[in-house]
Image (cartoon, rainbow, N blue to C red; front, side, top):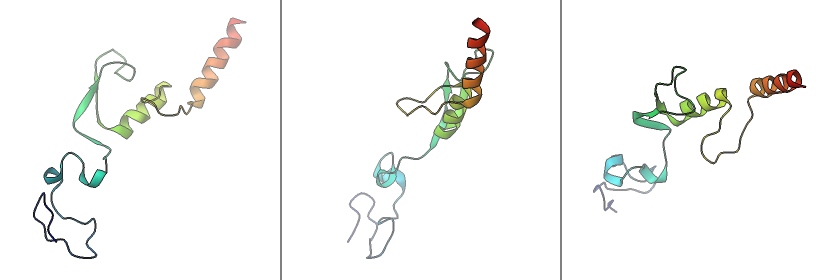
Length: 97
């Protein structure tokens, strides 16, 4: 049997089924979406640098960590509150009372 996209001869027991390059099969190989961001992504809001300049990230997990430290959540993920920020907000509420 041959892969129609890259021409690789697929044999029984081959994993992950085809040895063709990811570019032969589209953006993601076999439906797996990687963590990396080729070339990086400049983020202008929320997790930018303290002086307001855009911050460049090269992986989604890197953005997720920066968002957690800032007390934010990426897209539609379930929030996991940063305990330090929760405690700071509680102290601020107590001072206002």
